[in-house]
Structure formats: C-alpha cells, structure tokens
Length: 259
Image (cartoon, rainbow, N blue to C red; front, side, top):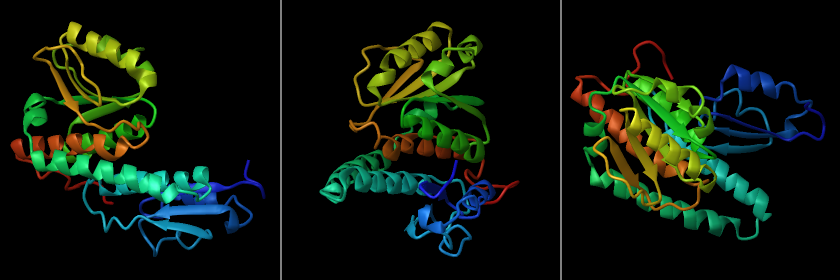
C-alpha cells in the first residue's frame, strides 16, 4: 500500500506507460518517487524529485540499447543505495567497464555460429533465473518483434514443469546461466532437451563438459550475476538480426505496433 513512507521506483522507456503513470498517481506526493525514463518530455518525467535519464536516444525499432541502459541505471542506483555513496561510483564503474569490454568483444567477433545453429527455428524458448530472468523477458520480445518467431520465457524451475513435455526435434532453447542458484536446474534442462531431440544454446560463464551437435555453448567471462543482463542479451540480438536477414526480413522494423 502506498503511503507517506513509501518510496516508489518506476521505470518506463517512453515515460507514458499507462500502468506506470497510473501507479504514480496513487502517491500522495511526488517527493516519494524515483523516475527512470528515456524521454524528458514525458508525463512520467514531469513527476518525482529524483530523475534518471537513460540517454538511449529515440527508439523506433526493436533494439537492446534501452534495455541495457535501463539495467545499467538500476545497477548504478542500487549501488548508491547499498553503498550509501561511499565508493559506489568506483564499484559500478569497474564492473560496467568490464561488461563494456565483453560487449565489444562479442560484437567485434561478428560470429554467425549462433545464427546458423538456429537457422531453421520457428520457435525459441528463453530460460533464465535470478537477474537473467529480465534478460529472458527482453529476449522474448527481440525474437518475436525482430525475428518474427514465436517465443516464450521461463524461470528454470518453471521450465521443468510443463514445457519439458513439449520437447521434440523442432524445439529450440536459449539458456542464460550466470547464477549459482540455478546451475542444477540448467544442467537438468540441457540434459532433457538433448535427450528428447531438441537444440539448446547455453550462454554462460562456466565450462560445460559436454559435446553434442545440438548443443552450443557461448562463454562470457562476467562473474557478477546481477551485471550479466548487460552482456548476455547481445548474442541473442546479433543472432536474431542475422536470422532475419537470412530470411529476407527487415529485422527490428515494426509493421503492426509502434514504439
């Protein structure tokens, strides 16, 4: 329940998301409101006393820039709160620079491996636990909007109830594996998908000692699971873009909705 002691932390790329704006109206005062948005002229930005702009530029296509900027903003603000301002900037800066180097490495590698692995896919299941669940949620939109394919996302434990029953030779999955808490579930999912004929790509920070023509492992050396969303979505974005081009699409261009 929102009251005088509540602090509401709200995020909206457009700053016009109806459910977010309506939620803000429940507060008696904007003094208890922290805003994260990409649009200075938005209704949301006109509220609140603490405001963080994403500086991601206008977004007309399906893109990851707003997602990564939002994750970075949330991580920075969390560091400020937890660190009580003492050393928080340095901690964030060190890990952010580490992530940027990994992102640049993935982009500069310009590999077709993941796109060729999923070149015949008509459906991709995205699975991630802990902070990686937000990556799985965003990656679902990327697959659907940019790749024009069906997609769903699950927590690892959710996947092991129900979706595992759907695995066959046409099943495709991407697993985001950066949390120690979900290692066991991820290993079980990999085993199940391979056992029942599906294809699976694991984006991870560890070695997976298993070889199979239907298994692709992409290793990214980021070891803080809360910063993983900054980098783990990049291979998916590049993969879907390449698959879209292979299929004669204009990936990311929206024809039925607008940003």
